[in-house]
Length: 365
Image 1: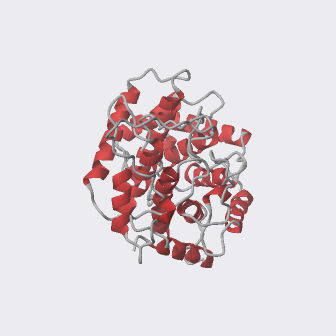
Image 2 (image 1 turned 135 degrees about the vertical axis):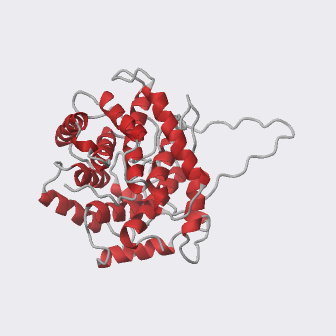
């Protein structure tokens, strides 16, 4: 299976990882608000992401501005929000606007790898640190593909960390409690991300003894743990494209067909329609399975183009691109209603995938 050097970055990724994820309240019962101290200014109302108006035309500069503003840079001993950084590192190289923030995020992620390498990482380590090791390797390798085209020494170190925390069955003990789908809720995501990173890594990394052994264990794990919903199937299609040995040609065709079956009449996809009953909103409201959004559309188009090989001039892809070009918000983002709790996270990662989708189709206008 060829590795594509033009990957603009699966990213994300999420950079990754590396600083505690914001905790969400576990209880559903309302909590009585604390009394404000006299003279304390009132807290601003939460941003209503769905209410911001659309831009009159697509703006790469606005997309870069939004992604830069939301990217986290970590300090040693802390971490970068996994949802924000992994997505940022995946998508930011696709935007032809240079920024100091981009270089800063990369530099801090490299420092985090050095920090992780100094820990006694093993199968009994904190699951968050183990997940960070996987995401750091996967995302740095993809970032190298999209930028220098060469595997940097620190990226190789990060990739090697992935095998230190791999479980005996070939999978990974992933983050689950209280985190947003789709990147933080199941072990399947960790296994596919590791395969994507190792498979795409430049300079023949996948042929090193450690990578060959680790990838073969991942293949065994994924055969024993088949995908449960279309988002997992999309991740598996990406992993098969990058590392090989995971899908039959018939399975590939069926996954592509099933993605298109979920396309909405307006050309987009709804994020929640990619999951299953395990994706539940914290406020217990029904999932929105019919309204197209940035994450659903960006992820679907990226998977179909990059891993599925669907031509950019396919009428269905062209309708999806038209949706993306006309649904960017004034601040530069594409809105996505969270299938769990945080519209901010879903919107941020959705914006990253929207950028990747456009890059894989006809480039960034």
